[in-house]
Length: 360
Length: 150
Ligand code: SF4
Ligand code: SF4
Image 1 (cartoon, rainbow over the protein chains, first blue to last red):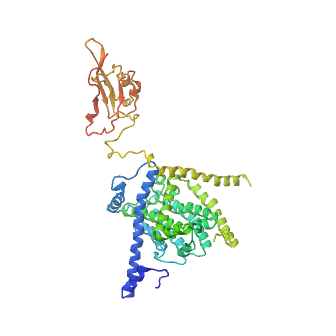
Image 2: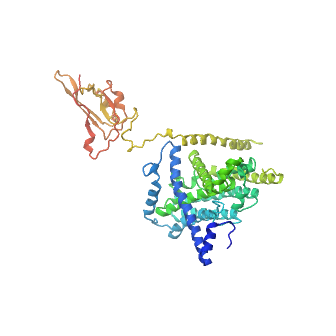
Image 3: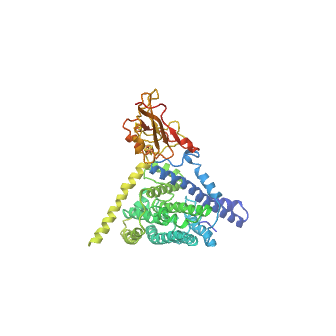
């Protein structure tokens, strides 16, 4: 059990706990706690952030009552959700009904373990992280389909089927974009992809591959928004058409788990965007030695979360800018535009590599 | 390249108009001065309603409490909800003047027709909006303090 990355916390515990098995167990528990802290902490921040961003775009202020500018509002909301009664309506498939949110939640938690939050803050350094994340994302679709199916409600079923169709379609271009970067970076491990962007801002993949990097990023933004089921692609839960879609029949903690999964997914997807296009935990150096020295002084984990939250902000702004397309428009966007473009992009990437047009 | 292909590429290029919409939302996001909502119970002391706001109906009265109503009944006829009853009376000279101006707030929809139709500008909508009450009978109001002038 030798860690592949320098890990001061793990080493400290291994050095001080005499029994190796116990040390291993403590390390595992620490990892689980850390992942949960990131997941729940960011979800709470995001709920607040979503409400505030939405409010300011619409010339409102959003929550203002509790605490400074409504900061305690999230705590109140969480308590309210936890105190709600958990029950299943008549005729639902109880087992699947309560299992669906948990299945859905596994995907973002498993993705979180693989993301390098800092130079040595990563639970699992997986050499094939990209294929694994693509595989794990399938749990998200499964959870939504299960939830809609088990609810015994036609709107839920319709919502979940729409969502399944949407997510499976967009999964393709989402994965192709990830593979595009894997091809450029020459590795499928998040850590190697991050380290391949060392240097200045120009070395980030969005700029390093001239023009096609930016195109790839835009397409990643589109397909990941659809993958996240967020507006403008929130066809699965279109409130106006489907009364909430697959989670119509859920209440209390079941609903909260769907909600939580959505927000953790937002974090993981933004993290992916950060790792793949914006240099992960690397500081945004600009090539001037004096400035870079100061930037390097800030720990990587802070850079990582700054980039992630900027990405999340972009997702939120897109949500409040665009209107929801129809289902057929959504499908034709994926199959007629994104997928062909992605294939062209992959070929272009190969051309760029073989002709050495990647900025070194 | 046939027509549908041209259409296809045209739509791809058009999709960059997204940036226009995005610039609007970003502009709104970064301008806190644009906030149009009121923090209502907190700013009760400083809250100022807009002049166009239509609250409760009231009688225009001068400093002596005299009104300008002639009891012509135009407002009563114009009210779509029958919220107004103009009850005339006779003054000492035997002329028809306003006796009681009955206004029922609970059926009024604040449409402002009555104010529009009054030929003498005797009534107006005021700025009150905290109009809730527990007792329905409180909604039947007598607007004039004194009898009208001929
Ligand atoms: S505002 Fe409209 S509804 Fe109210 S009293 Fe006047 S005419 Fe009738
Ligand atoms: S308020 Fe105006 S319209 Fe109504 S009865 Fe008096 S004068 Fe006539």
